[in-house]
Structures are given as structure tokens and as C-alpha cells.
Image (cartoon, rainbow, N blue to C red; front, side, top):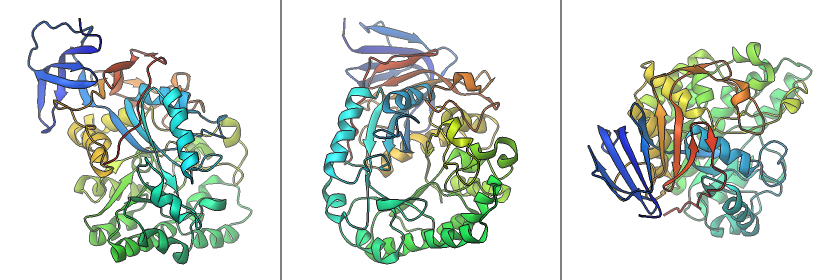
Length: 438
């Protein structure tokens, strides 16, 4: 009997050519070794009867804030990775705004060590740029890329002038991922709207012009130095329209489910729980972001999972932190849209798995094919149920999508051939692996 083998039977499998097969998948030693309409009796240690379930590549979430070290009261690598497993997320790329900041090799090594001991899914980490750590961002390894906060950050991570930004683009060759907001404009508008405590004003303070200004500046430097650029959490119609005309082959962009599905109406419904950076926009922005995703102007989806406690969110604007959780809801939220006809299941899988692996040069991930890593999720697309607060496993304990009737919830999540989530049960004894970036 093979010690590390798994046979998935009778699943509806999304293959690497975006075609479908109802059949079996055999996993051995962390890899997919056979895919067929029927695999004869094997010595597999474990079988899953996946009748009625859909088998997709595990989600790779390329933008999360898991709060460890230093902010573990909001989230930590254990609770966050459990939320990932429940949501079908088998790999994540985590951001540098922890305490201490991830801006040195030592801080990166510390995160990798923590994740190796705590995370039940696969992991990678960004190195954060400051105006003063150019050597670190060129040499720190392994990292998926350099994160630049052009706005919405405080302290050392804020790189809010062209003079500070240009040297980051001018030296080195690794991917630069930008939070594109114009901090000078935000500061000016904060003064203009000072004293307003309605959280809806957040979307006016950090308006679409602030986003566009920063995106244009990042693209300008990317053009000048032919530097690989990724624009995080695109939120506005005018950015999509700009990128449609000015997006070279080495630039990619992402969008969050929140910016696709929620808009400024959410402030009246859920108050400061709707507050995030960049902010929610209008119905028109929702529509244009969808169009940009469907036509390829936007390349893939990330959650920007940024949890805060309900106590922090209750402080009252403008004293409330910006951010929402998302890793355990993103796949069912998007699959529900696919079943409703807004897009296809194949597109969702590309946006949430295949295209992410390609953009970040992560080998053997994001696709169901022989020889690829067995990072897989079996989802139920036959049934709907409402998302309820009591079911949230993220430490923050809430979701902006509470009450939504969703389909596509994971039934099994498999990481490197190991079942980490099964019908509501999380296996905390399994550990993920550090991602490789080629």
C-alpha cells in the first residue's frame, strides 16, 4: 500500500485545456500521476467518492494580510490558513505590513519559519519597499515580489513620491506589486472632508482620481524601465479604461470580489465593515471592472484579506481601520456568479488559480494535469446555503458577504496530496510548503 496516495473517483474534473472530464484522479507523493474516465483498482491509501462534485485546481490567493507577527489579535498564520483551507485556497502570497515590517532578509526568514510550523496551506511572502531599503528588496529571497504602498500606508512602508518610487523600478528585475493610491491627494481630501463621521465619505476621500494618478505613475516607470509591474486590487472604471489603452505585456492587474460585487450602497447596509483601501466604488465601477476582467484587461482575482476585529470596526469613522476578510468566501462568491451566468467556471478557475501561478512564476501549481502538484478543491455546485457569521473561521469572525446565498462551497480541500479540509473538519496536523518562484 502506498503511504502517500489518494484516489478521487467520479468527479467532474476541469482539465488543463479548460475541457471537462467525469472521471478519476490518482495522486501519489504529492503529485497528480493519472487522470482517466476510470482508474482501475489501485493501492491508494484513501479514496474519495466525488460523485456530484466538481474538481478544480486549488485557489492561489495572491494578496493577503495574515497579521503575524505583531497583530495576532486580528488573525494569525494558524487561523488564516484554516480559513484558506475552508475556502479552497491552497496557497497564499502575504503582504509585508506586519510588526516588524517584512523589509529585511531576517524578517522574511522569520515569516517563512513561522509558516513552516503553522500554516496548513502553501505560502509565499512579499518583501516590502521603503524609501531606504533598496539593497534588501533586490536580494531578499525567496520572495514572490516587491510590495510598494504608494498610498494608504503609514511610516516606513509609504513610498509616496516619484523621487522615492523611481529607484525601485530602476534597479533589479523582480516583480513590483503596487497599492496604487495618490497619498498627497488623499491627504488634501482628508482636510476637505474633516469632521464627517459617515463612513461613506471614505470613498470620496480616497477617490477614483487618487487611484488613477498612482496607477498612471506606476505604469510610467514600468514603461521607462521595462519593469514587471502588477497593479493590486484595481477598483475604478477609469483605471480599467486607462489600462485598456496603456497596458504593456509585462503589466498585470487584479481585482477583488469586493470591488466586483459590493459598492457604496454597502455603507448603509454594513457600515464600517464596508470600509477598505482602496474603497468601494459605484455600480458603474462594478460593471466596468467586470468588463475588464472578462476582456483580459484585468488578469486575475485576489481577496486582499485584511481582517480587523469587530471591536476595532465599531470605533466609528474615521477611527476605524480599513480592510475586510475574504479567503474563505472568495471561491463560493465567484462560483455563484458563474452559475448565475456572469462568467464561466473555467474563467473563475483561470482567474483564481492558473493565471496567478503564471504571473508569479509558481511552478507546478494552478492546473489539474499529470505531473502537477495535487493542490485541489472539490466543490458542491448543486446546493446553495447562506453565509452565516457562526461559520466563519477567520479570527475576525465576520464577512462582508454575510447573509448571501452561495453555491460552490468546498467539500474537500487537498494540499500537496493531503486532505486538509473535509466536510467541515479542518486537519491542523498537515503543514503546507514554501512556494517556489522561478
